[in-house]
Image (tube, rainbow, N blue to C red; front, side, top):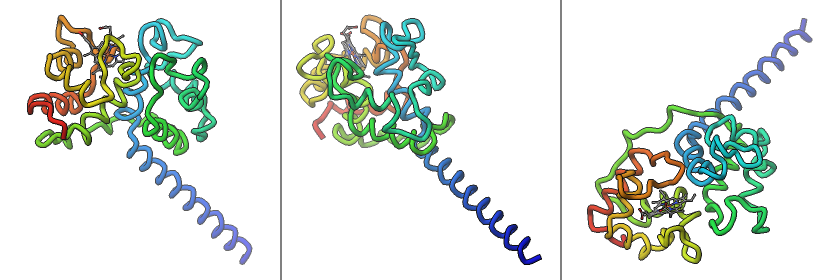
Length: 220
Ligand code: HEC
C-alpha cells in the first residue's frame, strides 16, 4: 500500500513539474510573440523577391511563413539551428543575409535563439496596438530599433541600397526631411514600397515613425 502511495506521489509531482514547465514556456513564448517580433523581421530581411519569398525559395527555403521558417529550425536548440547559424556566420560568402547586406543585429539574433530555446511556438494574436504610445517618440529609443530590425541590413553606410543610409541619424534625417521615409513605408505611389517584401510595418511601428518625422525628426 505504502509503495502505491509513494508511486502516486512521485507520478503526481512529476506531472506538476511538467505542467509548470510547459506553462512557463508558453508564457515566455507569448512574451517573445512570434507573430509580432520574429516573423515580420524575417519576412522583411529574407522573404524578398529573388531570395526567400514563396516564388524563389532559394535553397528550398520559403521564409515568409512559420512552416517555412521551421525548416531551418532545430526544435529547442537555438544555436544549433540553421536559421541562427547562417545569421552568425563570419564567412561572408556563407552569411545570411548575404553581403552587401549587413548582418542582422545581435539583439534580433539573440531573440531568435531565445524563441527557439523556449519551444519555437507559432504564437499569434499577441501583437497589441493598444499599448502603442506615440505621444513622445525618441529617435534612439523608438525609431532606430525598428529600422535596425527591418531596414538596416540593406541600408548600411558602405553599401546602402538606393543610396539611403538608415543606420545613422544623419542618414535617416535626410529621408525623413525629403519625404522618402514616410513615402516608402506607407507604400505611397511614386515611392519604392519598403520593406521590399511588400509586407508593411505594423500600425504601431508606422505610427511611431510618422510621429517622429512629424515632430521634426529630432536627434533625441
Ligand atoms: C532586402 C533589402 C531591403 C530592405 C530590408 C529595405 N530596403 Fe529600402 N531599398 C532597398 C533597395 C534595393 C532600394 C533601391 C531600389 C528601390 O528604390 O526599390 C531601396 C530604396 C529605399 C528608399 C528610397 C525609396 C525611393 O522611392 O526613392 C527608402 C526611403 C528606403 N529604401 C527605406 C527603407 C526602409 C524605411 C526600410 C525598412 C522599413 C527598408 N528600406 C528596408 C532594399 C531594402
